[in-house]
Image (tube, rainbow, N blue to C red; front, side, top):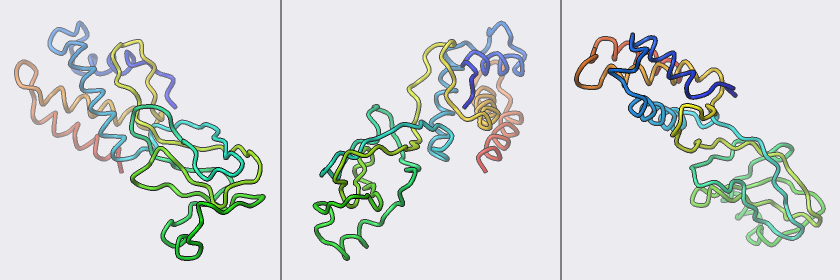
Length: 190
């Protein structure tokens, strides 16, 4: 993950816009572009914003929360368990949510309930699992906020902000530069 601050990206963007004093592109506008860019990158690749945590499978309980924040999240991995298909499992074991065993075989995430994961079978003793969750960061509101994004996506975010800045109507608008940065942004998502 990047250890940069939002101000690091803003400083680079302002330099590249030849607006170091931020006269044409004010911080509020640039923060808006950063937040829009973060949402776009998350929608394209949630792995750009990962959190590693431990969840506990409680004895006899098949369900646990994988993420407690308010932002959208995607479960990416559970170390030591395989992801199971609910329809296949239900066909093999219609009472799968009630099953228990000494070891958990796998997990299920239901699309309509993405903040929960279900263990199959439920463990007989409390067991911790390391999970990796892709989560959209809270909106950036201050230049001193830490930038929570994988390092390889920082240039992609920079290109998104540059394209948005050059698309803005008024002083500084440059549709050719906006198109070039947009192309670079999209290439960064590949």
